[in-house]
Image (cartoon, rainbow, N blue to C red):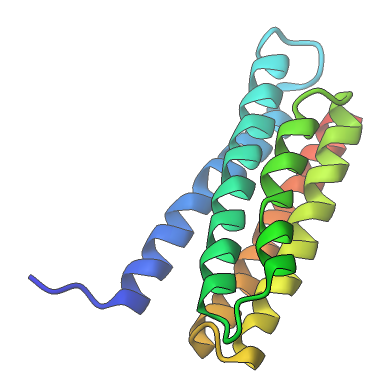
Length: 146
């Protein structure tokens, strides 16, 4: 069975959003005083850091497709992983804020990749929609941790 790349990418991207939504909603529902709150917070921060690393890998791949390949783009592509990792050590409200900013910045950067012909047009649409969804989830999480 041959899978269509666009449909598969959309399915996987939406599935990848589910932990953001679920953890953010759970944080809003359980309240700060429960023993579950720090566990949910750590799960959200860790998942966000992993996804930032994944998105940085996409940037690496896109940078390698450019003609000519720009070393600066390859260097910048590792920043999402570093930012995500650093966020694991920051106070929770600061970490969630940093993660929110990182996802928004990376979403904008990825959406511009189509202008250089490095990604299909649907990729920009996907990244914009998912960035908005992840940003909304992280804003909800921020409300829950402040």
